[in-house]
Every structure is written in structure tokens, then in C-alpha cells.
Length: 305
Image (cartoon, rainbow, N blue to C red):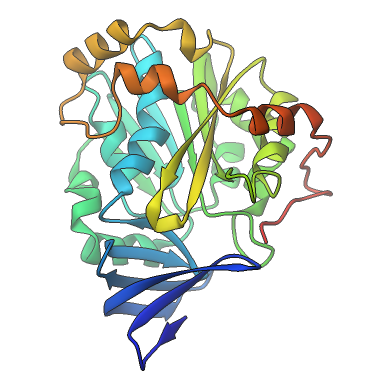
């Protein structure tokens, strides 16, 4: 919501916490078939995409989110050639996936075509031309339905969808049923990464620990990690899932070697030293996961506050 008198943009973070940013310009506001869309420019964060009142990414710190989401999993894989992206409308997740020389094809399925077209226009620093790459197949469909109806398999699956809001389009993609389907679409040794919601001390039990427990019921090996995203006002969590070795088994030197030989752009967040620290999460998260009992299913979904 905006305050016209003071030109501030206010975002609800928790029921008792708001983030206020100096508002420079409202570039777009509207309602698609699926969600409310705002594209704004704020003084601290630059151009930002906001869906249903929640910031999805901002120019100033999107590199932290998108490198953290994509680069660890792709770097762990020996020769990743095929990538599936669920969501990722800004194109920055796509940008990171295409940065690996080994990647030959990316299938990106985003439900909301209007959002993607708006991001192409208003967020060029996010996608940096990635939508024009010939390796991309862009489809506007429900990612769950697409994977159900298409039996193609992938080396790396990226789940970059909005939070599971009760009125939003994404909550069924946080369920055990969807994760079972996604596992069937992974090639042997493949990995999946899921953006898993806030995981700071105030909110890690909202969604994050339940997503972990649900993924644990499907995949033999999990690795959770988090980064601080200033424009979110929160620490944000990710979970890497598959049947490969734990990321901490790869030394920093090997991470740096793979980045040097494969990645075609200069990374600002992720490298070998970052990798070593990324997967060492705080005690409160480890204890929260150990005590979590919720299993997310279609009949028992979970919703962010």
C-alpha cells in the first residue's frame, strides 16, 4: 500500500511488522487474471516487482536471491544440460540458469503471461535479455499441469513461485503430490531447488520447516540454506533436494573451478567460500526442522500469513 502524503511504500512483513521504503515512482499497477501486480521504483531498492502485496525481487539485491536459488544446485551437477523453471517471471532465474555453458535447453513455465510481459518491459536489469536466448522454451501454463502432461525429464528443476497464499495461484505447488511428480521428472542424479519462504527467527515455522518436512518425505537427500534479502525485510530460505551428495561434500576450490570453466557472467554473491558457509544454518532452524510434524498435501495445504 502507498501513502501519497509522504511518498512511502509500506509492505506487510508479519502481522506486527511493516517495511517502509521511500517511493520514487509507480511504474505499473493492475490486476491480472491471477494476482495483483505492482512494479515500483523505491529509493533504496530500485525497480521492484510486487505480487499480491509481497515483493518478489528488487534491482538492488535480486542478485543475492537469484544466484542463491540457482547457482549452488547447477554447480553441484557435473554436466547439467536441461533445466525446468516453475515461475520466475522476472527472467532473472532464467538468466542465472542460462549462464552455465553446459545448459542446452531451459523450459520455463509461468502461469501469468501478463506478469512476464510486464517484466520484459519494466525489469530489463533483471532478465538482461535472457528471454531472447534460443535455448529457452517459454510456456504459460500451470507448472504442475505441465509436468503431469509432459513426460520430459530434466537435470535441474527450479521452483521459483510466489508464496503459498490462500487466494494465490501457487499453493498446490508446495504439496507432497507435486514434489512426487517433480521427482519423476528428474534425470538420475538430478536436483531440485525450492524457494521455501522466510526463515528468520520470527517466521521460520510459518512455511519453511513444513516445506522441508514435506520434501523429506519424497527425496533422500536435502540441504537447506538461507540468505538475507534486504528488500524482503527478512532472511529467506531455500531447499535443495535430490539423491546426490550433500553440497558440503564439494570443497570451495572445486566450486570455484566449476564457476570459472562454466559460468559466462560475473557472479556477485556466489563462490566457493560462500558455498561453504551457505549450508551451515543456525541452530534454531535445525531444531525447528527436527520438531516439525506438518506434511503439506492437497487436502492439507499450508498458507503464508
